[in-house]
Each structure stands twice: as C-alpha cells, then as structure tokens.
Image (cartoon, rainbow, N blue to C red; front, side, top):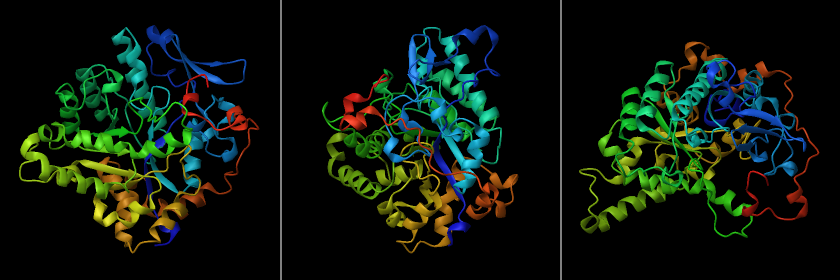
Length: 427
C-alpha cells in the first residue's frame, strides 16, 4: 500500500476547550458557575472554576512547536496552534496530517470528567456535564460530523445519572464515553464492585464504548520524588496494564458480555506477554484463588471485549497478527507531546514496512476497526475516494504546518532536568 492510499481514523486525540464553550448550552441560571478563562499577569491563560485554577500545561498542546520549547509550565491561547481549540482549524490540521476521523478526549474537566465531581451542588454538576457534552457533540463534532467521533464525559459521582447520560447522548449519536482506568484513586468504588453496574448496562444496551485513557484516574506513575520526569513519561502508557489486569479479573465482563472497553493510548507491544501471563497465572493458581473463566481462557475473554489503541509501536505492529488484527486501532494524539502530527501517515507506514501485513490487514488497523467499534460512518457523507491521505492533503493545499516558536523556553529546562515533583498546577 502507498502512503497516500491510507485511510486513517484516530481514536485518541485531544481538544483544548475554547473560552466560549459554555455560552450556547448552559442554562442562564447556572452561568455564574461555569468555568471561565482568566488572563494572568504572567501572560498565561487559566480556567477559573470556583476556587480551582486550572492551567493548560504545555505538554497538552505542543503541536507545531519546536521540541526545545516543550515543557510543563502553564501556557496561553496565544501560544497554542489554533487547531488545538478552533474546530475549523482542527479540520485543516487533520487534512494536513491525512487523518479522516478523530475522537477527542477532554482537557478542562479531566479525561474522565472528574472536575465537576468536586461540586457540592450535584444537580448543577450534572447540568455542567450535560452542557459540556452538548457542546462537544453539537458544536465541536457537529461542525464536521463525518470527521469526528463524539465522546461524552461522565457524571462520575453517580452511576445512575451516568447511565442516564449514556442513554441521552446515545440518542444524539454519541456511542463513546470516558471513564477512569481506576476509579478508586478518585474516591469511588473499584471496578470489582457492583457500584458501576447501571453504567455497564447502559453502555451494553446502547453499544457505547467505554474509553479508559491512561492517567484518567488522576494518579501519576511516580517511582521517587527526585526521579526525572522522563521516568514517568516512559512508564505512563505501559501502566495501562494495571487497568487491563483489573478489568479481566473483575466481574464486569461476566455480568455484561456485550460491553466493550478501549484502552486509550495504552499501546499494544505489551499485549502478547500479558495474554500469555494471564493464561499461565490462571492455569497455575485458579485452584486456590477461585478464579473462574468457565470454558474460556482469560486471554480469550480479554480479546473479546478490549479495543487496543496505539500511536507508535513498532514491536506491536510486528506482532499484530499474534495480538489480533481485528482489535487494533490507531491514534495520533494531537496536540499532545507524543503526537505524530503532521507526519502520522509516514510514521505508520514506516512501521508497516517492517512487516508483511496485507493491505486488508492495514486497512483494518488504520480505520475499519475504529469505524466498527465506534459506530462511525464517514463514508455516508463523504465519498471514500475523498477520505485517503492523498485526497485530504490535497484539500489542505498550502496550509501552514511549519513549526512556530513562542520564544518561551520553560525555565526548568534551562535550569536543569525536570523532576516529577515539578508537576503541579503552578509549576
């Protein structure tokens, strides 16, 4: 297959919410409660939500910036590429990257919507969640429905309210919802309880994919206070294995055999050993642990329910057939620091070139699996021949993809290695 003939659907990108996101969807009586952008004296922009100040940390939106200027300090909208927060510009950045479709995780409320759970007035919190989801579905994704896969945030504090929201947004065409990869650090019952059963039932009924993104529990992977941040960056994707082990040994899939979970931004290279270890542990220890998968092996159950997602994973691509082509999807992670914008097609093809994968297998991984799992049909409104990398880049024309320096090199990069302890809202 030629690079220009690829069709790419990314199941993990991110939106930096624009300042006016609540204007058209929040009832007037709640307007004073909505998060608002404040421009600070130091030149940064932050969201103010009650007593909580939420900066946009640099690594969240570095697309188009020189790597030397990456950092963890707060930024301003002026420092961001407009495609981070302007949907019309986002579509043009997608064209330039040859990406047909994109599922966008939230930034302001956290990957799993945990910000609104901090409110004492849970009725107001529910309204804010609904308003956020309406903005995301109607405005962000509604700008170009054939280009976006809607993703809702949860009313995480109330499983019944969350189940209702799953059903509500499903009527609006949204069949994906974020959920923490481990609810317990957020103060909620674990995946092993029956607390979340109303949610799993609603998702099963509506064909809604539960997207568990790395870091959505809000708990960073730390080894030592004085460890450089490189340790966390390396370990972060691989630690989704904890969520994988939790899920497969929880009662979730036994109770809800139609449920599908995506391990967002978790990579795939670790999967073969994980599946081998699952089955070995089961055979060796089930007699005394009481684990029971019936007539199946745990690896089979895992592969029946899990959507696998990767950005760049040469080892995983070479092992794709061993893993299971039919469960693998791709991501571009725009505009985060791991993003392969504007060279996603070239990055994917470089890894495919090390294999003998067929065009049929490549198509399954790059778009067909995502279309199936997320009930996304771009071809209903856009002819297939206009969906390829070559066609999209032709539409982009001379769209500027050059790097743009802000000349604001983070001070910690100048002064020495960045440490894990530097990760704070005011770092």
